[in-house]
Amino acid sequence: QLEELKQKQKLNRQKEHEKKRKLEAKKNAAKITEKAEGKGSSGKSKAKTNKLLDKNSKKSFCRELKKVIEASDVVLEVLDARDPMGCRCPQLEQAVTCCGGDKKLLLVLNKIDLVPKENLEKWLNYLKKEFPTVAFKSATLMKDKTMPEQFTKRRARVDLSRTTECFGSKCLLKLLQEHGKAQNKAIQVGVVGFPNVGKSSIINSLKGVRACNVGLARGVTKSMQIVHIDKQTKMLDSPSIIADPSNSALALALRSIIDTEESGSADVLEGVDAILNHCSKQQVMMHYSIPDFRNTEEFLTLLAQKRGMLKKGGVPDVENIAKLLLCDWTGAKISYHSQPPGSQRPPPYLTEDKIAEMQECFNLKNLEEENNNTVQALKYPSPASSIIFQSAGMANGTIDENKVIEVASEWENLETSKEGKEEEEEDFTESDDDQDDVEEEEKDVKEVNQALALVSLTRHFLFSESEHSNSLSFSLDKTADEDDAYDFNTDYV
View 1: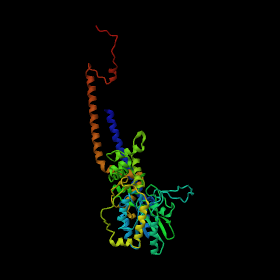
View 2: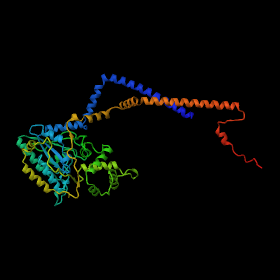
View 3: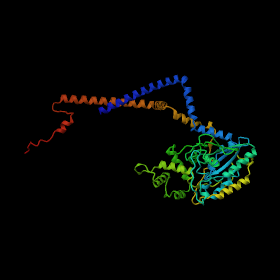
View 4: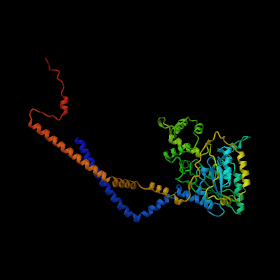
């Protein structure tokens, strides 16, 4: 009991010392900040703003995207044919259609080889009533300028629909060249869209050479890049549209600019859960050859076990398999399709006059014929092998860099020093918990004093008793009693 009481006293003293140190450190820090306000605060703020304007920041992406829109005579909004409505950005379309002048907006329906033929035709009929739409399939393997050419033997018969060749490029180039002739000038064509829809791949397909960097990672293109197709047309590659945080979990999972490798496990699992909730469960089980599952975690564990993605001890690597699944759904591996809306309901900014204005100067009959030729030239997956997907509708995007204030504040918080965090924690604990700590300490001190008083009284009583009584003997040494052993030499009769 005495040792416990001493330990309590030591702890109370340590708490008091720590409080004093914190108060002193806080006072010193306040003095230092007051002195530094007039001298070095301006330099630090400038350094922080320069870091925020990094190429990887979302503000920089918005600024570069705005440059592309302003510099373009024609804007190509690239859509994934598997979810065209989910790839449309109302903020972008409104910015292009309402900016004034002769700026035009075209829709490019990319990855058409990943959806059933009937579904593709439905989407072309739906989208062409709002904007001129081009059916497109990008070339997957392009020649690199830096690599030497390698001559390989080709077979006599090759199925062009199964190769890496591009479809729809002639139609798109013809459409742009006709518009340039009507304007009597060389035109600049901006290519915009959400991540992984194939913006850079379309430019490479039109150029015939790998001029722009492409990859499975999201946000490969960081700034505006100019690619000369011919003397009359320049293509402007742009960074991806930033998905607004107000979007649904499905839209953020498929359209967010953040790479899956850098995002947290909770966000990835939430994205996979949203995808599975918008798909047919039986078709997902058939596609991945997985038995029935109760929830997303069980689905990922079964998929990880099947593909051999295990950690130490044979534990399924759920996080990495979830990231891989998201890459598959945004890439060109999985065939899924969504149905167009039942009724034609254009957005509020698309009036009849705006639709007519966007469609003028284009030969829509020739465009329809070229699209039909492209559709007939390709082979498509069957409806049974393609997963039915429920689209979440248009995805909101952020185009104005002034609206990305929250992102900037997060970067500032990441760049702040550990001292600032410690001071905030101290302020919080001291302001909120000071009264409770003081009351608890007073109670502990009272208990300790009472216990010490009782111990002293008992000692005094015991020693006084031992002095007055000769017959009674009190031993505090327990080991002495325990060491008494039986003497086997003694005999009893």
